[in-house]
Length: 123
Image (cartoon, rainbow, N blue to C red; front, side, top):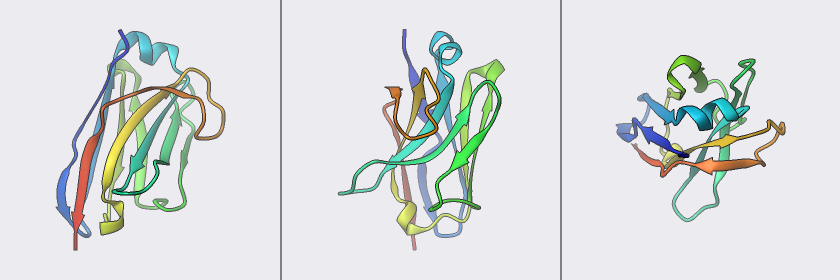
């Protein structure tokens, strides 16, 4: 069964930190070469935030969050994390994790999605 469950969202003041977790069903995780974090701010389109190659550990972080957000994974736990520091009001969004069977080097190809976790940053 395909299952991705995000957690760790919440409300925080500007400058604060949150750590998002995405627990993935073992079969889905072992079949997926890349995991990504996306976000959708209110009234805006969804955008890619960070992605990681689950086998080799290579990562990519969007310019908008570079230096503040870090993606990591724990293969033994089939879990992907997004550490978010120095949060700003513009980071307010629903955050989703997603799995791609093949790493495309882009934000395309993500087939399986979680339900999302809300992050709200107040000034």
